[in-house]
Image: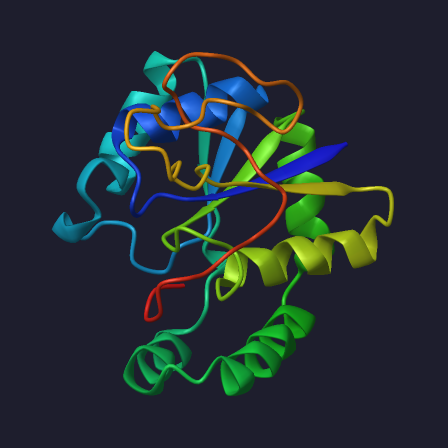
Length: 185
């Protein structure tokens, strides 16, 4: 089984949906703590569920995989990932992660964890995915990220996926994380 992850920031709605559709995702699992804020734009919980439904993609809100408000506020204030990571891993160890994973895999064949960060490097969705692989070692994790912009001015944004390149100007998937915007997890 493949588990995907995606962050919605720094992606247009078109890029976001294209990444999900190209990967064949059939369900998005929202693991954000704050998913109803007006600042979330198209990724606001109820709006996102509606948009995903329009494209035949399911939606599941899973607060058991979100950080605590205190942990998130502390990270947003000090941006100390070295402190955040072990604390969040400890939270996961206290939560029913195996049951949550079983529920996700019972609902979806190709699920995708959703958070805000554009890249998984400093995002709790990567930590959740790693916890899932501890439970299911054969689970393959793929992070859906946009391809870096081309250095050639006239070239459109790459549309290649990790499986096969294409020629349209659309998003791409990649398993290699790059940089992350701090303050959102």
